[in-house]
View 1 (cartoon, helix red, strand yellow):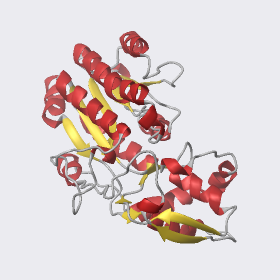
View 2: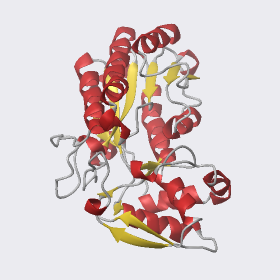
View 3: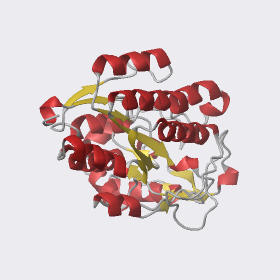
Length: 317
């Protein structure tokens, strides 16, 4: 491999929040083959295998996932197939090709009982089907022996897709008051932050060739936490959204407990994760969640027209 011109990058889930941003941030690092669910459905294992064998990528970047957290409680097989089995198959194919697999996981692999931020070496203990399925994917990738980077992130939002930011803006345009959970803590993470940091990591790999590149990948394979810096509650996140969004209307946001807002899937009370390993290994640090939110809302004029068309079920967040 002599450079970007010879590198093919298979990117899944390009219509999703993170996949959309990755399709832009990966430009210049190789020939990006970006596929939507219609071409690569993680629920169709044979299709997954065939697409990888047709494309023959040097890198596989996989943000695609089954993300309906509450629905997964009654749709166990589909969640496990997409989040557990399919990443394992991608890893097997990456191993066969000598390719690097980049995969995204979640804070929900933890039980949320720790005091303080989770580190990568902490014991996992998912409390819902979604978390269990994502952990199964992590384990399958590690067991394959392929070169891999697994980035655990949390509370993802952006200007497209289904997310808490768009839900709050939509509801805030209609209501004078709303109630939001105040005893779950984590780092709201902008999809652009995830894509930018991923590109930063892969740029380091792209600068190397031959044995040096293989050694770099092998030495750094593993799990990394990749979230915005800092932490807040869902209630704090909602208040920050309305504070920064401006406009003539600002609803009153009342704090409530998890217990008073039951959902089919149990969520961890503490989703805070330390990014120190990412910073130590790659020299990269994410911005504070407030700074990233401010940057995202700097495009409020293009966000607002999308709000009316958003049909997000807020119970998924």
